[in-house]
Length: 312
Ligand SMILES: Cc1cc2nc3c(=O)[nH]c(=O)nc-3n(C[C@H](O)[C@H](O)[C@H](O)COP(=O)(O)OP(=O)(O)OC[C@H]3O[C@@H](n4cnc5c(N)ncnc54)[C@H](O)[C@@H]3O)c2cc1C
Image 1: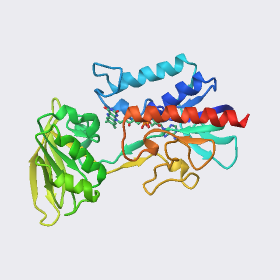
Image 2: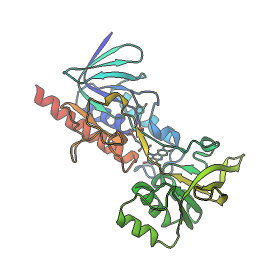
Image 3: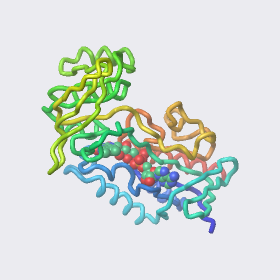
């Protein structure tokens, strides 16, 4: 069977659902493919305190359920399947799904997200959300007055450490080398912040804590120069070693940056191909937040609407 649509939306995170809400209200009858993770990354978290409109914390599951419900009420065709190939060479663009359906779309909004890299240590998944986090902006607030550590040495890790230093007791910044990759201004700020303590030439080799409920207490660090292991007692470990944008499908078709993020025009969701838009974490290497993803989903929808009306 072939599905024909004016707007195909790939992904069911905040960016995809918001794009669907706007394009549906514009009468464009969008088709949204939810992909393998219905509701996106936010479904992995327990409490969200920074999405406007929810004075009491809401779970990620509940917030994404509500977004999906809003899409359904507006008549969005949500299909629980994955796009496995795309041909951007001519319009309508042709896609194949994992259940071997064909989709022909006049425009496409890509909102396939990005996944934070982990350290691949035993227990890491057990303590994810119970002491381990990949987002200080999201979870830092829960560690007020506590001792935490940030792993990484780039700009994002540096920003996360600076953010945490405002309300945590001590922030250990663990880096494999004896120099940071973060830019000079950021390095200066970090090194002059009293409650940030640098742990150079070191990497976490194991993680431990309590079982019931799971709660991280200790990170064992290996000094890569001396090979010595030491235990660091912390309440939180923020892993900030980069993310993998979900862009395998678009490689060699769309312009991507060196880390694989889709490059969009400044202050726009337009990609290197007319009629193809990217929204959310997949085009935002720096600030991964649901509200930003939703905002760019809105912009992508408005730009798709404009693009389609110019075609007619
Ligand atoms: C543990 C955790 C806690 C977080 N806490 C917060 C918080 O408190 N506040 C906050 O603002 N942000 C938080 N974030 C960040 C937030 O989740 C992301 O910024 C946001 O989800 C990005 O939205 P998105 O729509 O761009 O992508 P995602 O939410 O990543 O969604 C991507 C979607 O694309 C789909 N997809 C992928 N490939 C395909 C394909 N081939 N075909 C079809 N679909 C596909 C997936 O199934 C998924 O539905 C947190 C993230 C994590 C991991």
